[in-house]
Length: 306
Image 1 (spheres, one colour):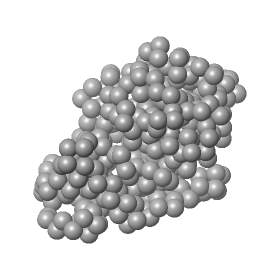
Image 2 (cartoon, helix red, strand yellow; image 1 turned 90 degrees about the vertical axis):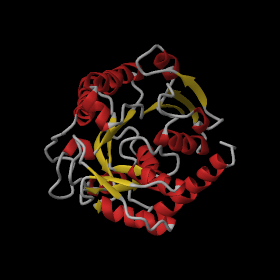
Image 3 (tube, one colour; image 1 turned 30 degrees about the vertical axis):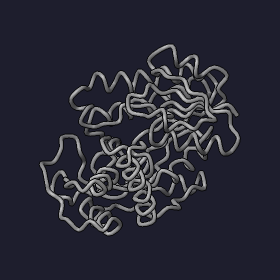
Image 4 (cartoon, one colour; image 1 turned 135 degrees about the vertical axis):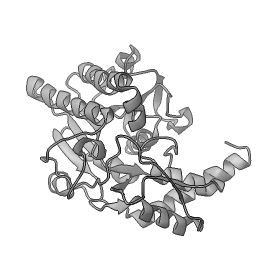
């Protein structure tokens, strides 16, 4: 099939493109390279450089049979500082993708942590949606547009609410990339920093599992959580990263950040039941594999080859 991946030069998008190419799809990548890297794009995919807010979207979407919409402004602090910009990319951009897609099913990358707000227990898809940041508000708006399009046009667009995704190619500077932040700092011998007291919890899911969920969700409609169902305190994550890297230095602590929730974990029973998806990469295995990639990248940079 002919598949378009918006944001396909980024972390999740490029891993998805690899999987699509591997199964024989004709893949087009649309990315403005504001955060993605051209070097991430599989050479078997056709690359269109441009934004979902420009005419490049129409060029990239031409004859697409599937659209995976991963292009986004994905940083919570940026959304707090620049809510209009966040809405332009994450709301208007999503509307433009839906309009351009026509009858082609769209799979939309939403967020679990930023949509549900504080979680007293693993959040289910039918729980109240109480975002605490402009980023979460914009992603929820995108989901509402998908639902509205499905009602109005009989389409079967699907939203996937990701937990904290980690794995190879994740940039240390982006929101939600705490695994990459810790591992990259340890690889470079730098100090690690935890915002708040480290007792805030997150649900971590490996990018390979996320890619499998994206592929399984095409044409299903509705919204599904994608996570591990396990909440891990950030301080415990730091300890696990230390065990993987051998870096035993204690982290430093800074003030908690505006817009961050204290507890975030997703209930994944619905996607298991409806799509047959289950997490396959446990956190300890995923951290070891990610560390292998990070340490090899750090060595390559030190040698001047990257």
